[in-house]
Image 1 (cartoon, rainbow, N blue to C red):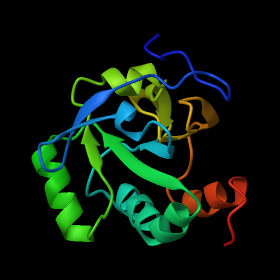
Image 2 (cartoon, rainbow, N blue to C red):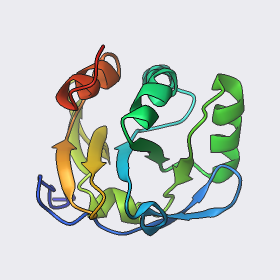
Image 3 (tube, rainbow, N blue to C red):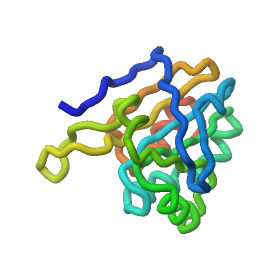
Length: 159
């Protein structure tokens, strides 16, 4: 079985350093003392992932005013993430995890049902990490559409 261990509220957030869409290294530790939303998505420039990224983009100001920063993580190479960022005016870091190290550490890689078949791939997942580096929310197999609104509700933010 390729599923990684699932994380839960109260777990320490696994540390990572990944390359962003501009080729810069970004570490989770760069955000120590901040609340961070880290979400894993299957592929840049696909309909569901574009919808989810645009929902995060459109909610960024209210998330930021509530003290949350957003990081998107996929297995796409930085050059593809740059195209995605430019095409959809994504205004938060998009991180490349081509070797799936962070995906596996967060349990965001494993078996899933896709069109009636069991496949191994990215499990669309979102994690909220507090200032101390603890996970406060671990959401697996979320839907692309409506996910950000649901997350905002869970965080107690107005719609």
